[in-house]
Length: 179
Image (cartoon, rainbow, N blue to C red; front, side):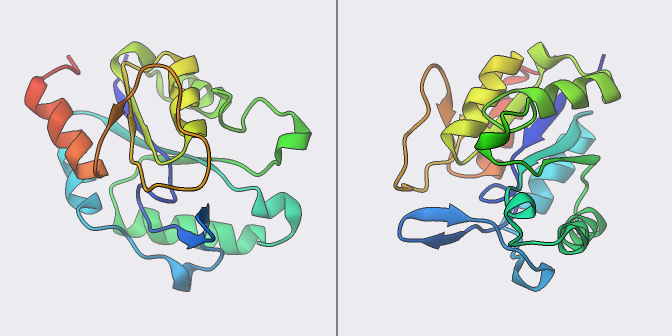
């Protein structure tokens, strides 16, 4: 069994577009800005034996605000420039009641099956309550929350705050808690 770091995309790997206190995903590759320290963090994880798995809600596909081609271009760009092992996407909105839209753990469970991941020795990091709850429901060891102060609910239950992906990675690696 392998260990993984599950990563929300927008707000963890690349900058979200914030309007009126709410985060939105970039819909064109030209709008992608990789956050500082992300490449280093993902390289440290890879060197420590982790899989880097992106799990992202992208409801703009269902609402028609983004095309599948545009989404594919964004993910191809990220995978060409960062050590990412896989990207799993939920294109649905809440009304679809699917099992893959976070806060449900479906994307993490799919990745665990595909990559033979031990969820109890893996980690989730995100910038929204949905990310944290998905990690909790999947049974991740620690769920890290990057708090940007969005105008929405905060996570519930147990989680740790981190200022960035790199800060969370350094914390995990310094403690050796992934073995």
